[in-house]
Image (cartoon, rainbow, N blue to C red; front, side, top):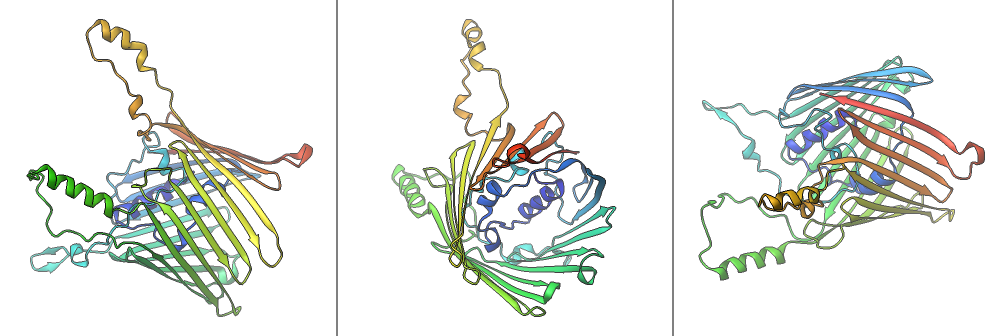
Length: 415
């Protein structure tokens, strides 16, 4: 389950209209969400608060052999007034990463749309997010600086300060440029003086341009033939899937070593009438690693995923399968009171037609994964009244008497 600060950071991306899925780094997000989930260790409590639309705090206390914790603070220049902060009101889909349904490409805002003038002077500013986290008793400090430089450009700087790290810490900088049709990312890390470049290109039609003038809501199409023509044009021009290709290359000046990888992805879009699915293929030619994934949303409450890894040099392979199953809250059957409504002459209620479309009233989500070595991971994430909780276990089916490798519980509360 995502922490409260990650939840607020994702809300900042949405409010600033930044597409997180249009990047080479998120090529395998769906399969990672279902197969690479982490199970809690020990007992851990999180207490968070969105004290104002621009400021959030979070405190963590855990016990894994010894008592530890952390203090977190976040500031956003963009007010997040519409963000649901109470743990009882947050949609679980925003906290439990699962199947990611790609949306249609969106044309970035025009630069002059961001201009705000007052008495002949520009007073607009670029939206910024600041985040800091202090771990105790290790005295490790994490920091994040996120700034929208333009509608197409974003700068992200992450820092870690720890005496146990070389040179006392490290800094990682990302400069991202998103033009909808393609995305480019430049990376620099002080660890080994590493430079890198990532890129992703989306095949298919260009995203629609922004109309300068919106049609009036009172305007109507005069004839049925014109209405049918407009509907047909929108249906035929709307793509049902997206094919993307990308790659990355990086090189460390200090250790004089580099790396390269490339990947492909095909994912269905909301206009697809069948089951949503995502297929990816990634290749690391230097290491000889080949990885393919297939994920499908078989039912609105059920997602399945599989991953096959193969090394062309050692001929070693690995297979993983996983699932994600959501559970709804129990509701009283409407039919139980229909006999009374019939006696009173009222209309019979039937909410079963909207049951599949309503995804906001969920009791929890069960995740499970299994690999070819008998490693089983189980995770249940849900909500009880005002508390959010996660409990999971790691099991080795071939371990005999020592099957249980780990178990933990996390509890979150936010206001």
